[in-house]
Length: 528
Picture 1 (tube, rainbow, N blue to C red):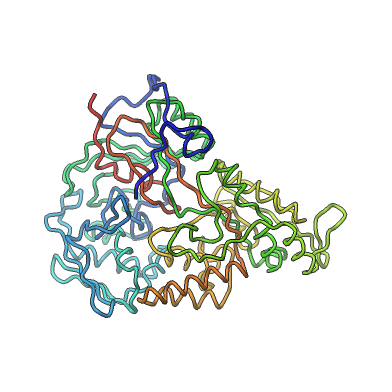
Picture 2: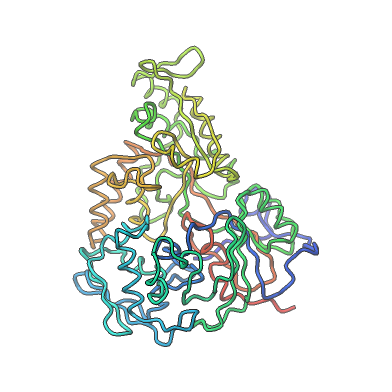
């Protein structure tokens, strides 16, 4: 997918205002080596083991999958030598593997490593929260050193997309405790980079893999600096301490006149939403959920909070996706929201906050500390809710503080995957995963949605799948478990010293594998 390189237009719109401008950074602390890159990211993984979920959507840098995505998000071979051969019934996928590939420790890669990786993830003893993504697999079998056959329980249409998952070495990871062994922080892979150090909460350091099957990268040293606070990340970028960083729109705009940097805007499936837990006496009322869903002014959030770098969200599917269901948009309608609450027995109290059966229409809304985009969305949601007579108390905290409260407290959350509607919607909405970590955080329970999600997951017929996801979106419009607010373009400011940076359509997760450095192994220093 092509990136929007927003250079040199008028300040009337963000797509025209976020342009590189006039002065180069001359700070002596700027990274000096032309073959080194230091990028600022907002989050870091809990583990670097693909057996525990790291890199499951591709672009892991340390590892490769059987397949990978190109710039247009089309599948292409990686550790496989070609796209899979698929049986007529859609239940057998055969991959022939690339020959001569070695792990970074010099040991050969083979089909046994593929079989080991998938079998380990599917083992209930493995702490992989994304195991349900591989539910379709009945068996995985290595046939010799260079062939792997997957047999599916049902014709799972997007299965090939699941095989971007990184492959772990059996000779290393298979000799350790899968959940706590050294491999989780000192991985060995076949990818273009080798981890050289990880200071948690500070940075991850990588060096180019000289034996990489795709050729040794020109960027020899890659550092991913973990800077959770948006303002601090912008400051470090401006000082020259970072070569590139992800920034929210208001901070990215500050680099519009810096001619030594380019701002990239990546289209995404990344949404921000508010969970409305069914186990809370206020948000558990379907009338409150319906009212809040139309009491929010989504377009104002896009215009004011995102400076137009995004779009209104009515569910997990962006409105410009082929999977979006026209007619499920919910226009801002404060008066109708008030009527819904009146009819449901929520009467306005003397302080302007509604009350029903002695319960005030009030609840907390948590957002993660240091995340300005979430903070701004939380405050805007609270302001809109108050106009309808609902008091929302915004609270900031770390995920360690927030997670134990998710059963009853609302959270300004996010998600989204461009690969296939099943990838995000099943975990977000199916009742079988209610309260399972960050899956179905609202504990949404809708039998119609459950059936549609199952149909979308198990059918190989595109028409059946489209009907299923249309049903999901229509149900969310009638019975929301979340209030979806915006889909957000990811903005990155990058030094102009390399050739090759670009963007893809991105998922919610925009840490190590996304951003203009998705293809850093192909970057070249610009010739002076």
